[in-house]
Length: 116
Image 1 (cartoon, rainbow, N blue to C red):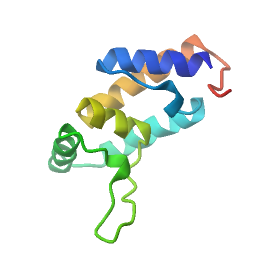
Image 2: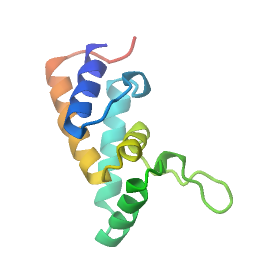
Image 3: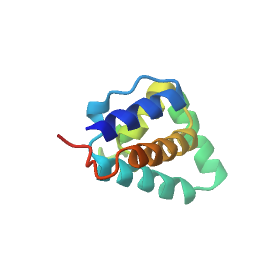
């Protein structure tokens, strides 16, 4: 599980927050979350991105967001959204740091699936 340890350590150092490696999953799950979050953010205009960043900046975890009927809104990113809210960090900042940490952890641990 060297990958997940390297990823969580790198991401925590990039963002200045403590990260529980056990909440992140394996290489594929982390890669999927990072890619999905980047794609989602890329589809937003500046106004919507600023609104979501303001919500996250207030410490609200978008991974638990529901609509008026109680259905999950489904913003991608999983644990990355939780990390953003806990650190009151912008989603763009978290996505960028996650991509950097993902690449570094993959390069340092070729073939590691990141799961026990």
